[in-house]
Length: 474
DNA sequence: AAAAAAC
Image 1: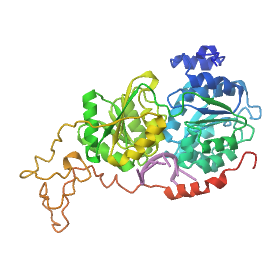
Image 2 (image 1 turned 90 degrees about the horizontal axis):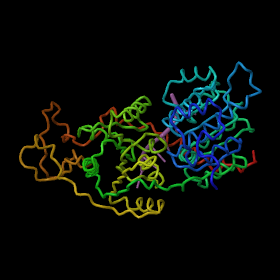
Image 3 (image 1 turned 135 degrees about the vertical axis):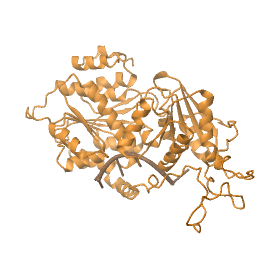
């Protein structure tokens, strides 16, 4: 029951690794590390459940590097560097982050590592791959591109890590994963990490893991006890003001704000910027460059509010975020746990505020059921809306069209109400009058239809049951 | 209801 080792120095890791760990300031192991490292060192398959922020990356990468160091690849010619370990993740940011960590752990060794993910030029990635790497971190789509272009040869892979496996299945990566795994030698070690052990995950494990050791630390879906969770009722029109009020009352500077949609994310960011906040958006319609910049600016403290979709819900390791806001109640209760896991990390105290619209009651019930905790929906007293229209208004405003609150009535004059502002002089005067938008309608360049691939996703999902084969039936 | 990922 008690683990025999509790600090990294007690592990018999190679000096190069011990040194890197020490330089990074790590001493005590987290529970997942204490449990997983000895098992991974034996070379067994592992099925691990651990929350993000538990030190999962070190838990698999340190013993993995250790094994790569100790066991030379006999079949490889010394001049070449075949990929010996492959780590797959669901999002680009996660892949980047994990790759950086691995590079840190490996920096005193001769082992080389690199990362490939979409949204970036193929060429530099190809060049890195051609130079040869022992450890390759990737998102599935781009890895397949590289495999097909013969940039990556995976027939010497000894270890594969499927991280955030449940998320990868959610995204519909199963067919991609199956294709990638088909390129790997059968004789290998497979490590699978997942927030939950859903039936789908168990089936994936049954297909691709051999006699795995199951490791489960901290109850999955448990929320950190250091996080103060609050639910405030808020109509869409009041949501932004509620957030600003909480920020002010609590004296909070930095926070994550989660929105359920990319468009909502873009709009909210613009509105907050106009309110004078330093905000940045992080979602899938942003270029990869913008995504990385937004994250970095937030880390550096150049941006206070990071407005994001669930692309950022999982695993991003950002220290000391004092608060998380759910501008929208997440569709999946599980995502709630991941989102608020951005705060209250490593024993720090955190605040998680969820804005609940009247139509969200069912989603709230789902969350309460998952976290096994009742949370009262409170009403927050908001300061009166300040009228940003006043300077434009001619005469008293006798109607409330929600404009002040940036609501969805904004810019849409209430029938029978006097327009708030005269239409600007317009040579095309017969064009229908559009009230000035105090709403955050994204400019045309930002509201271009999302290049979704829902159709492909659905197709992939439809194929899903057929693609699942019981273990052993090739 | 939407989001995540390859061009």
